[in-house]
Amino acid sequence: MAKKKKEAAAGKMSMKDIRGMINKHAGKEVAYDMRDPENPSNVIRWISTGSRWLDSIIASDRMGGIPVGRISELAGLESSGKSYMAVQIAINAQAMGMDVVYFDSESAMSTDFCADAGIDFDKFIYLQATSLEFVFEITEQILAQSETPTLFILDSLANCPTKGEIEDGNYNPKSDISPLARVSSKGMKKLVVPIANHRSALLVLNQLKTNINVANPMMMRVEPWYTPGGKAVTYSYSLRIWLTRRKGKNHIVLDENEFRVGSHMKCKLEKNRFGCEGRECELKINWGGDGVFLHDEKSWLEAIKSSPHYSGGAWKTITMEDGSEKKVQESGWVDKLRSDADFRQRVLDIMDEELIHKFARREGNAKDYYDIDGEDRNEDVKPNPVQEG
View 1: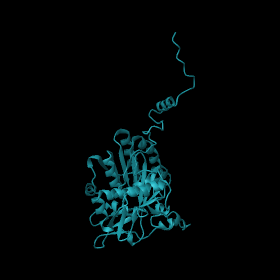
View 2: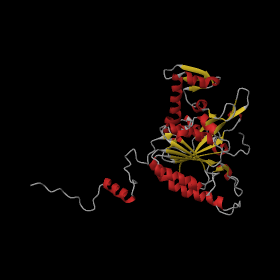
View 3: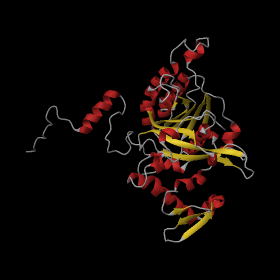
View 4: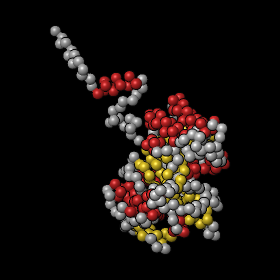
């Protein structure tokens, strides 16, 4: 006689069954096994920022970038290169198979600039950001109907009006209190989960404004900058990158005739859910002369200056893995990287050791990671009323 199948005791459900019950109740998949690498709580893809130094300091123990499945902020002073970086990130996203939707509230994007930079217009949609509500509505519709992972770029949040501001018919700033903050907070909250589930990304460009505190001027030294959009919206950001200028005459990019053609920008991780906040790096941005581009490879020299395998002076010396030395002058640094594959790989290995692995092991001088100008951190971010660019 066949044995009767033992029935499950009432009230006993496996975790798999519970997840299935929850997903059925929700009408979509919201409950996951976190051991599944495909669950939306894991960031498994990163879009390169175009700066290897910046990519190296975002994620702990690995190379990072702009996280896919998350909302990120790139904020900076005027003429700090925000829009240029956004285009570079868009190009890198397209190389990963992502579409790009670019919301422009400043009407500042140029077709020629995008074409020269390398944008694939077959995977690129340019939209005028007529209102912040419009940006959120279109983003929500694309996430619901498109199967292709998409990078959404809002350039910029600070300059994007709300419908209420457009329709109120006047220019009185007190006619509606904080409309940008209220709409931003509601819109970001609605997009966090759909972006994660769709494996897309939202990059919000924003402005850094001087934090004027008449009642307590000392607060300007502690928190010298703020970003428009309200405080609530920052909770939706997984990554916040702030761009300010490096100090000193040494941090201006000059051509062979000593005309100013670029700037050294400081990147600070103001918020970072993937590693450590407060870390800093440098970007060398060319905005004149030969055009607008990032001197990524030039910044590698600064990134490895604390390594025992590097020594400075008129000739820069790199100790190779076999103990031999290769020397190069600063003017020939980029050419050497591009013509000597072994030299290039050795420099990249040193960068990984200095920026990723040593930091993960908490080795070396902490100020090398948090204070690239070698000054007190609060002094280092003191606002400069004269901005060049």
